Length: 55
Image 1 (tube, one colour):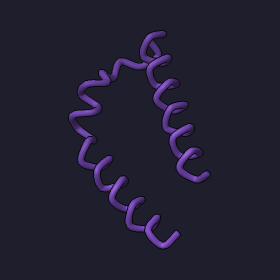
Image 2 (tube, one colour; image 1 turned 60 degrees about the horizontal axis):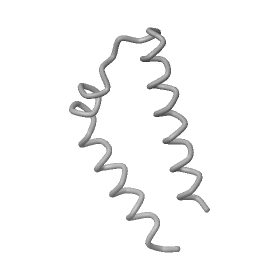
Image 3 (spheres, one colour; image 1 turned 180 degrees about the horizontal axis):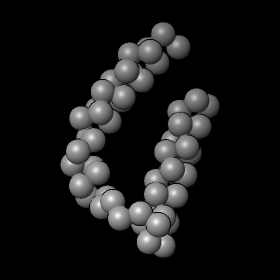
Image 4 (tube, helix red, strand yellow; image 1 turned 45 degrees about the vertical axis):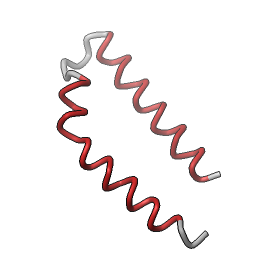
C-alpha cells in the first residue's frame, strides 16, 4: 500500500512539473534536472529498500 502511495505522489509531482514547464511557468530543463539529481534518487531508493525489509 505504501509503495503505491509513493509511486502516485511521484507521478503527480512529475506531472505538475512537466505541466508548469509546458505552460512556461518555469524554465528548468528536465534533462538537466535528471542529470543533476539522479544520485539522490539512487540513495532514496536504497533507503526505501533498507527500511522496507522489516515488513
